[in-house]
Image (cartoon, rainbow over all chains, first blue to last red; front, top):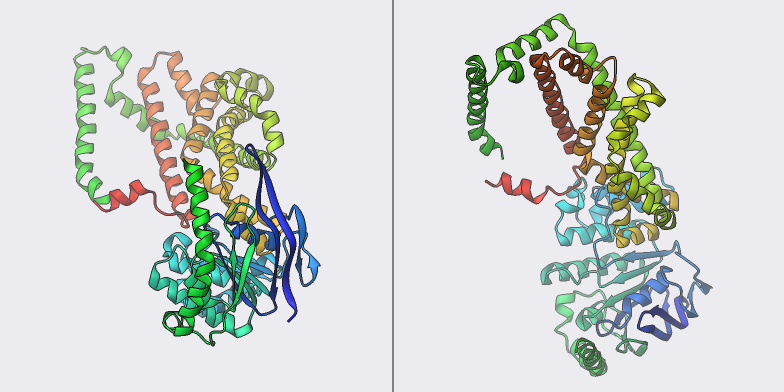
Amino acid sequence: MRDAVTLRGASLAFSTPQGRLEVVREVDLSVGVGEFLCIVGPTGCGKSTLLNLVAGLLIPSVGSVLIDETPVSGIHPAVGYLFQADALLPWRDALGNVAAGLVFRGMPRKEAEAEALVWLQRVGLAGAARRFPHQLSGGMKKRVALAQVLAVNPRILLMDEPFSALDVQTRAQMENELLRLWAQDRKSVIFITHDLEEAIALGDRVVVMSAGPASRPIGSHVIDLPRPREVEEIRMTPRFLELQRQIWEQLRHEVHAGQARTSAWTE
Amino acid sequence: MSTGTGRLWPWQLALLGALLFGWHELTASEILPSFFFGRPLLVWAVLRQWFTSGLIYPHLGVTLLETLLAFACGTLLGILAGMWLGLSPRVAALLEPYIKAVNAMPRVVLAPIFAMWFGLGVGSKVALGITLVFFGVFFNVLQGIREVSPVVLANARLLGASSAQLLRHVYWPAATSWVFSSLHTSVGMAFVGAVVGEYLGSARGVGYLILQAEGVFDINAVIAGIVVLTVCALLLDALVTRVERRLLVWRPAPASAAHADSR
């Protein structure tokens, strides 16, 4: 399988008043073309940092990040990023937000809005095209954000705990919707989450990160569950539970290590 | 809010009537000397004479023109300067003490300088108004630029926005939204600049009318001028509220308004 994204010995360190803080250390990781990769790890293990490295928002202190075998030196046009926090332009309505990326990339406004409307329909929000972000619920905002990032048709999609702020039902709904949209053209996906169940339900592969600082991948598990999947149902299959037990064995250790470290800081 | 004012406005009107009546009675009986306190009926007569003879219109026109020009120029300069300094932190750091100093200075004292530079016409009043409007807008825009959410910014960049597009689609709306939140103050400041400028030396304007009346101890005309200015300020304020509602549809209603609506 060809690689869409490769990290080779990538480390990132910040200098802080307390000294040098290494967030991730010597990360080797690759994502195949069309692969749905989920990364799990304890809180504060530098999962988001990893994503920002791939997005070109951060540059590794050591090592390199490659997209299509070419080193990344800044924001790459083939990369789409769905943020954990609210990232919509508050002064634009849903349609304007979805059209924004297309307009930025040089499409005439009329055309961009027509295309944006199609995307709003795909995420089931055509009726809310003229509403502003503050008039939308959390789930609706996430749908608009998803349509916004998919509208520019990125080949690589980065997702940073995108559904963590949603309630359980909305979340399952969004996960199914994501799988349905992903199945249409199989983009390469890196999906960050702290929720192991979510990672197994969505991914082709789950990578476990060690507790930070200086965190790195410590395990890679292929998820051989059949597709298409319904997230609520697949959770109850024996194979799912088996995988969950197997990965949790590894993750548990890191979560405890992470907790010990956090409580040591707070004391 | 509408139900609240609906019940209140007859009382507010009655209060105004009572105040006017009290003023009338006290000055008619000369308990308050009418030379110093004027008389409501005479003020009314001056107002009627001003409006029926048409004497007031050119003066009012000049004052409003000065207000408008000062508001427009001051706002534009404030936005440009605010965006520039907001986007260049080093320049902002360099200029900070000077900006603080100029802002702390009571800028009305600049009026004589402006009168010397720009004469007694519209120019000197506009200049004074600009110095008053500029800083409010400038500080708001600076704050607006500095508080643009980094996530929104990163998202726009990842969607493919160039620096020019970031300026136009992210920084500009963020900055202008803060301008609109200070619109009431800005218009009020521009008005103050115009009237104070006129009052300190001019050949036209409502401030000039007041100055003239004061020169001949015509207290009723002074009060009439104040009434005209107050009504104008209220009208301008109402206009600003309408513009604001139209331009800021994307913003959630402020908590206080929502609270008042639910009453």
